[in-house]
Amino acid sequence: MVEVETSFDAFMATEHRRVLALARAMTGSWSEAEDVAQEAFLAAYRQWGTMTSPEAFVRRVVLNQSASGVRRKVRERSALGRLRVVASREDDDVADPAFWRAVAALPTRQRQVVALHYVDDRSVRDVSEVLDIAEGTVKATLHAARSALRVALAIDEEDDER
Image (cartoon, rainbow, N blue to C red):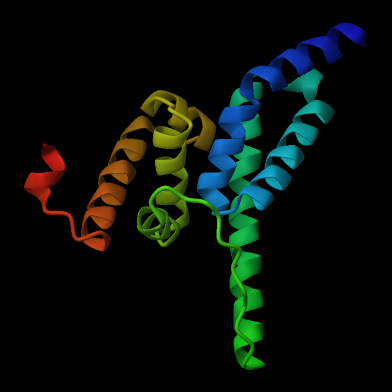
């Protein structure tokens, strides 16, 4: 068992920063990202001997946990709204909050693809493996996400290509 633990430790040491960044891009909060990343690595540890692609497995868990968290927040905000209570938001130190708000407003699949491709620096092929979708679907989703972000951020297409 020591050999398995050692290889898991090496995996976690190598992947932790990137998985945490992915979780941050998906959740919008460093504290939530830390929880999601920890859950993903715990799930990977429990399945360590049975996985063929630990990198894809951990990222899939992050994406699924993040989507569940978003759904939970929507339900919470709705309930708080009915009670006429304004939910407080943790204000993270974000370089471009308008950009991240626009990313957070994307549909889940687009947000996942953007986070994997740009934050986690995954190739189209890697993104397709993590999400278990075709490479063409990844490309189409990236295109749709870029278009939506361009509109949301009022970026002129000519400016975007420079």
